[in-house]
Image (cartoon, rainbow, N blue to C red; front, side, top):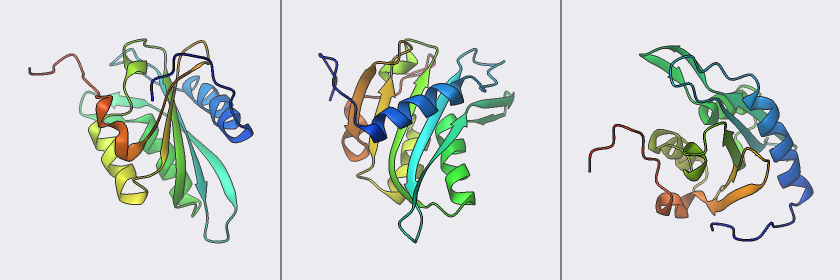
Length: 147
């Protein structure tokens, strides 16, 4: 749901927002020049919850790690595999309109198609809140898109 008014965030959503803006500060975006941060709220087998962060890491034109997948893998390495939600932000106003690329969405889809996606603007306001399964209305359209 695209947001027209400024919603009040829950404690969990605010924790995701704080984590995602910390994560974006670590991004290495020498190729795209777009710094992206992500934060994943996940649960382990004992019901404990934790937030895991990730940022984009661009090593070369052929090797780029998306922030959303870095955060997801950080959680998995710690055995937090039940994904509840993912928050994303970037320093690009164009990228903030999208709800993750198709590859990242597919990885999350395998784990929980009902996980919530939060997209935050650079001013830390919530731009988009949508369930992953409903996110196709918010496409990721890179510059090289063929129409």
